[in-house]
Image (tube, rainbow, N blue to C red; front, side):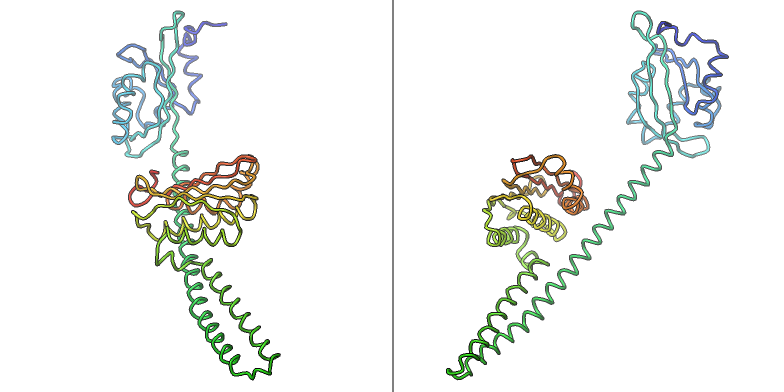
Length: 362
């Protein structure tokens, strides 16, 4: 088996044959402070657009070709570590024709028998195509995020309009019908008990319908979210949840020192709504808790229950369905939503929404 220090003991012809068809740039330099360049493969000319001889004549050409915006980031490491076999990084270069390329540079030390660097070798790969693909994916995600935000906004506008029309138009009509039914009830002779009973039945149906309209209108878009803000709406919704399900609720909500804008308030309310719906349907919990506060210009909300919890498979399924909609709302505003659960230990949801100029920094 050849010794480590003998790895580079090959003839120039063999080295040229090995590197002639390599897509990556292969280079060798001395490990001392001079970092003298001993060899660079033909791929350098294809990627950099200059001759190898120009690099042999002026090794600083390599560093000078680095994009000015990247030089400060990797300059010190490039100069002090590159020819010591301790450098690895990605950066941009500017070719002589003015075009830009992305480069992945990896450096390795070839050691002698005593473990000291004998030669330093490097592999340089042109990753421009990969970076372009990554940028296209990033732009697509940003466009998708904007589309999700737009769809959510349009949906909220539609819900608000429908809720208002149901409350105002249908609600007023039902109230008028209720008043007329009461008037008719008091016009009937006392001896007409079967008619009186029928009118009273009509009034009872109208009252139930009015309550249903109010409930549907509130589920579509509670007016207090616009009128009284997020904290009051959270407290109201949790009270309604307790009245409807009988599940005990613990509240620790304090948003009084911060006004939450409409987009963030709507997102937090919808996530709360969806989370508690999931609790009532799937958790078998008899207690839930809600914490909400603002810290470091970031809205924090935690929803937890003492239900049966989920294993990893259950969490994965949750992420595939119900949780995705909540995550989309959080991510669309630069935030995050995490789930923590285990069988028999309940479930916790952690929401973080950056507010104002801190977006994305929670």
